[in-house]
Length: 82
Image 1 (cartoon, rainbow, N blue to C red):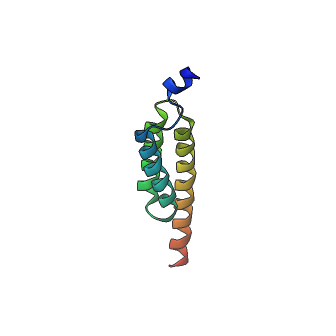
Image 2: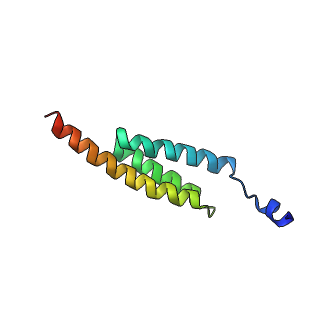
């Protein structure tokens, strides 16, 4: 039990902030500026994953998916309004 408390099972404040900003930018990339917010989410995921956490890896994967979705939606909306 003591070894678990020394490792720090919970999220660190810095990782929490990186993940929060990363998820916010990943979701924003669906609706606006996917080429700007998608890579920002990926970078935040990489920085959060440096400590060995799986949450950063999930953020990277979903940032790529959301950026692709945003690019597809952006193209479809551009065709719709032409």
